[in-house]
Image (cartoon, rainbow, N blue to C red):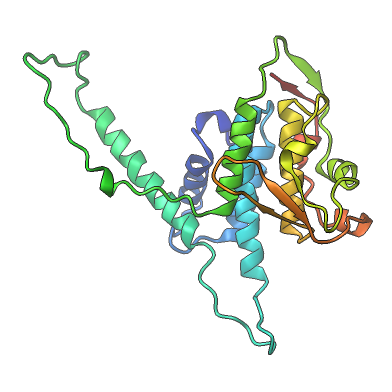
Length: 262
């Protein structure tokens, strides 16, 4: 029987991932990606209620872990059939975990200190703090996270429902089959073309977004943006058939039960 992990105790997917690595006593520089992916998916499937906005972050991390696992299991070959030496696909993930761990440790250290206005009081002028903005580096090169940013922006533009409605979510495979009529080879389209009155709900936006990620992962479409936070452009490279659907991830945590969508 697996260990139960309560997702609501973690601020995000990196916090959960770091907890699992520590619990399994793994070396952060040599993560057993197969085992940690299994543990991560089991943890998010254990959620009783699904907060769509938070779930987007956890599902994006799950997709990243699966992608890393695939790269490690399937070596790349050149035209001569020789294996191509490639950079460790875990490198970027380890970098993000180390940065998160650094901020987490700094936060714990700050929490132990006396809090101004609660434990101690000061008299006099506040000291000016200067920040060299040239030292601040934002890593926005990752295509996956750029797409996730566009998805979050779309979510923010959706009007919040006045009341709560409970219903079953459409599966990713069903949504892909529904979208196939508009995904025609040689005819470019955009994410916004799939958003109408019926799909203008957070759950349907999530399913549509996940469907496009799955199609990109199996090589059916290519996704790109003209700039950050812009609409996602879609180029269809292959026709969608039943065989394509068999390669799609099931995302059981979204399909197993009916969830309350706010």
